[in-house]
Every structure is written in C-alpha cells, then in structure tokens.
Length: 103
Image (cartoon, rainbow, N blue to C red):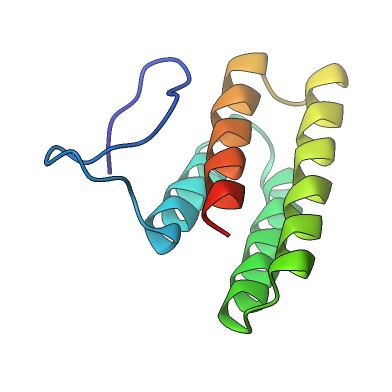
C-alpha cells in the first residue's frame, strides 16, 4: 500500500496508474483499523465497508453511493465529537471520495 503523509489528492501506484476499487477498499479498511480509537468504535465503519463491498459486487451503485454518504457523515460527526482527529478523518474522507469516483 502506498505510504501517505497528509491527505493525498489521488492514490497512485509507482507505475503511474491509479488504484483499483478493491485496493482502495483495502486501504480504507486498514485506515479504519489503524485509528487511535476504541475497537468498539471501529466495528461499525468496518461493517459498513463490508456492506459497501457487497453492494458493489451486486452492481448496485446507487446503494453503494448512499453507504458512502452515510459513512462520510458519520466520520464528520466523529471529528466534531472528538472521537477521531481531523487528519485521520480527512484521509478516510479522501479515500471515500476516490471510491465514489470509481463507481
């Protein structure tokens, strides 16, 4: 996985190609797992990612976009509630945006 400092505009491989949807989902999972938060907090977003993967597999982009929107709103609420840092949230939101652009 690419190492990022700050929030990237776009994740790109060394050969210049962009990451696939499944790679972005894997990065999203690892970022959620790496959050400095309680495990109970991490469970819901990880379940949402599983749900998102199923909706993508079933080729239901509208439902997948709705799940992405829900996740974005929840992440923003967690920042205002002080549960996660703004930097962590921005990285996650950037990946969510990239996933949405590939749908």
